[in-house]
Image (cartoon, rainbow, N blue to C red; front, side, top):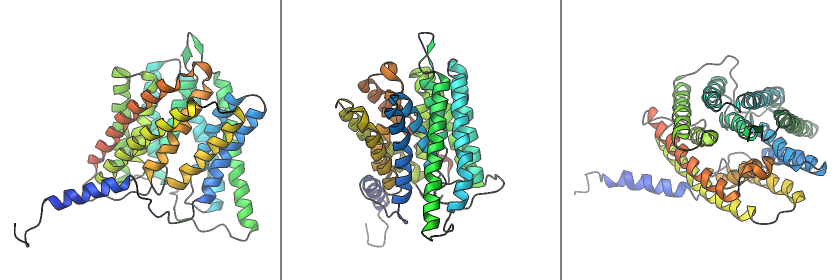
Length: 365
């Protein structure tokens, strides 16, 4: 081959190099992440610590799910974030309420999973809310159906207990955001600086329509595969794994890389959970452990998605296994289940990237 002729192997080699490096390198964060990481950590720590001190650590785990409110709208101005976060919190509670309502009916719960995923994605992309995408609305719906489902003809967790604890967690997360806003204003930092522009009227442009189509495909196919071949109660994890791959990103290469990162990070994170699950952790230490995991997630999620998944996986598995009580499942069983579900979801999420043209965008989170 002459020097003037292109080497067809070079693009493939370069792509492979990018793929391998994406699992290990830390990308620049752009802006300091510790303020939002601290808010998220406190939103996780405070409700869990409060309920634990009251002798209800299981309810504390349910309340800790409300901390997901704190990771939304981090790119808008602080003042706008304070106005809109209650809407996010109400949407999370609505998803949980629908999940609790449909939990005793597996087919209805599966249909609800698909509808919630598509509706949450349509509103999220239509209003351009930015990272982390619609995945946590779907996750809360899935947690609700899982924790309040029927076991032996009885609810595993009383729906009112779950919704009440979750509402307390949402309120605490919002209070933490308000406190951070007031501290910022008292220190003279103002209320400007947000880069994300929220749409006043939802509108789906070409990229948003492609993302919504991907969500619909992952939700439908992932739910059907779980219903037919795996476990209907675990369909939400498969769908969430796929939605986490999609995020708010556009592009085939991004979908492939994030799918791989999702699986690798989850496998390592499941191993971390296995290690921690067999250590006799005092109940009063759990708030610090989960708060630390949440802090690490927000520090690394924009820098290395695979590394963030190492912390996300044990966090969610702790919430599921601890909130459900003794009947919630053995750690080893949870680990194997989540690895299988994540593999299916990550493959679906990555494959859905074929919806985009080859030249479509890049990752943002």
